[in-house]
Length: 157
Image (cartoon, rainbow, N blue to C red):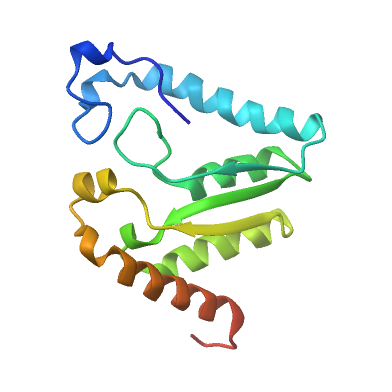
């Protein structure tokens, strides 16, 4: 979900990491979010099986810092289409059990229409959110395994 209303690249340092929030207009953002949500509704009407959301931070190419929020909006507006969360960037989350709970809750609310995938995120996001990228692989697998365990083993967890 990109934000196309930024100055030409010749006028800004970067569209990643150092893109100032002064270039973002919340009214335009509101219209874009509504449009993207409407596109998912249209996809269902056209017979598509699914639509996807992802997580990106602080850049013009991914204005979706919380894919679970966007997925919840799509689930509320549709009845049959699957919603792929591809995905929550696990190393960027403090508590993986919160991710497990949120995705499980969405799946129950949707009647089983959530498809969940996980990603590590990008180097630019580690920089802008101040995470050490050298720790991302270990953080990812620890969170991944914990979430799968929470979803598949008897509790309490």
